[in-house]
Image (cartoon, rainbow, N blue to C red; front, side, top):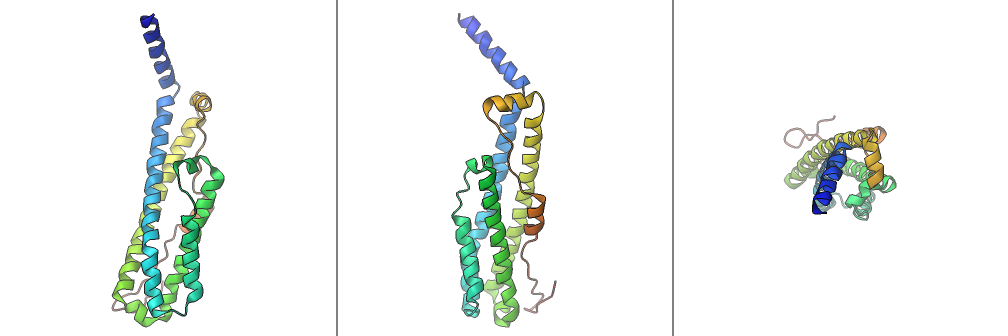
Length: 203
C-alpha cells in the first residue's frame, strides 16, 4: 500500500512538473518579488514628501493650493492597501496606478513652484530633497519596468498549452500590468534642473 501511495505521489509530481506547475510557481514568485520592489520605491518617495512640502512651505507658504494637492495625493496613495492580492484584482491595480500617477503630477507642480522663489531654489535642504526625489523616480521607473517584464513572462506562460490547463485547475490568472498609455503619462520623473549656484536651467 505504501509503495502504491509513493508511486502515486511520484506520478502526480512528475505530472504537475510536466504541465508547468513548477514554472507557474516560479513565475508567480518573480512577479511578487518585482512588485515588492515597486512598492519599496514608491514608499521611499512617499517618505520624502512631508519634508519636501514643509521645506517649500517655509519659503512659499502662500502656495496653499499646490501644497494641499500634494498632501491630498499622498493621502489617496496611502488609502490603497497594496497587498499581494492586489495583483489578482485588475480594478484595484488600476486604482493604485492612478493614485501614483496623481502623486507624480502633484509633485511636478510642487517642484515648478520653486521657479518663482529664488531663495527656495538655492536652499540646500530643498536641493538635497529634490535630488533624492529625482533619484527615487528613476528607481521607480527601473522597478516598474522589471515588474512589467516579470508579468509579461508570467502571462505568456499561463496562456500556453498545456500550462494553461494547469493554471485553470489551480486558479492562476493573468496578472495586471502598467499600460502603455499610463507609462507614457507617468514614466517621466518630475525634474527641475537648478544648474549651478542656484541658477535655474530650463529643460
